[in-house]
Length: 352
Ligand SMILES: Nc1nc2c(c(=O)[nH]1)N[C@H]1C(S)=C(S)[C@@H](COP(=O)(O)O)O[C@H]1N2
Ligand SMILES: [Mo]
Image (cartoon, rainbow, N blue to C red; front, side, top):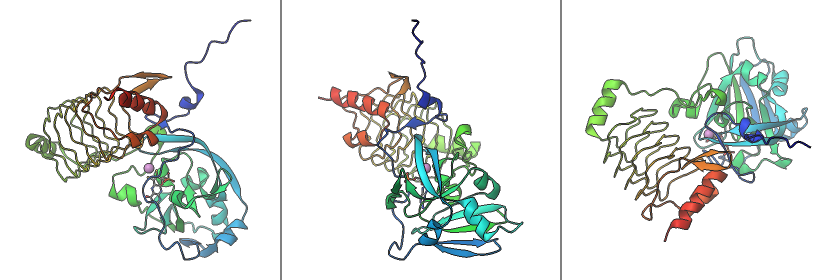
């Protein structure tokens, strides 16, 4: 009998949007807020704004509405994904059938019971069409409080920041009211993972960028999505800067200071990072493939979804270069994806 040629592609990776990596099956990272506020008060869900019948539901009343189970994929903007997660609860559509949207309602805002009044919004029709769920359980268990229990939004087909944890208010609006990450941190308001709608474009114009590059001082500045690829920025001062989604690929950044900077989703591919200080920086989703990390210090960094190499099937390629003076916390083992963990294991094994 003829053998079937083995597919080079893992069927799971085919379901991954561009730039995403799978977390280990038993992992579910926490992102953003970790707990609700006022958890001692009984939980209620208020539907308000442009509805015919503003309503406050208790959890019991929600449980008495028709329940829906879905299986969906989680794609976090910081590049980790988790496939086939089973959520159950009440469809947004079911709740809205009770409360009846007014014709002028065009957007829906989900608001959390949390200390910073976290929220996110979507066009109303899109939220309904995507099958947005108000979830109370995950994989057959009550939703854990640190993942948004007792009640969270789950918006299939969008980056997970559209899925608000601890939802306690849903407001229908005539005009959009962009949420916390979207208005505060430059997250893209459309959030389609297949189109990599992660961040809005840089707010820094070219002249301002040129001046900053000349000064080599980014300390404390918000330079979301700045693109400085292939420049010589050796010794750059950038401690506490906000550099989400910045493009430093191919840069000379030896001995740069990125302490406590926010570098989530920053690209350092092929950059010279010898002796660079990243201590306590946020490196979630950052890419260090082909970078030279000899003597670099990544101690205390947040490393959810960080990459140090590329993978083709099971093969590790384009690894970052390290030496015995490179510092990466062993605890990162828990938060990296499986191929990246293999890379880290190999790195740790080489240490004296
Ligand atoms: N209330 C609240 N909801 C939130 C956030 C948050 O900070 N606060 N972060 C969002 C982001 S960016 C992501 S990726 C997911 C993370 O959910 P998890 O912590 O259960 O993985 O929640 C989303 N919903
Ligand atoms: Mo996220």
